[in-house]
Length: 100
Image 1 (cartoon, rainbow, N blue to C red):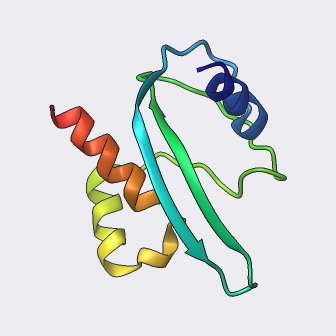
Image 2 (image 1 turned 180 degrees about the horizontal axis):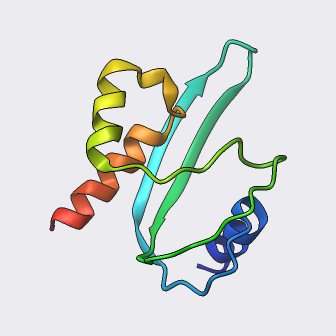
């Protein structure tokens, strides 16, 4: 969890103390048009908070937004390229965990 906390600060500028829960891992391989390939095993970590301020590090993240799950699901159907290669896997794991 220390790596997750460190990356929240480094990538998103989130310094709010959060109780993180590791809900498992995802594995994916994605090839990009620039010739690069990502082949990763990532931990999925969640937290609950009513208010978080973030200050994105432009070297690490392009954007971060709050969305309603229904809006995410609709956009996944109509414009799946709007999300990163791994996002669908994280959404599925998170949704499954919260439904249990």
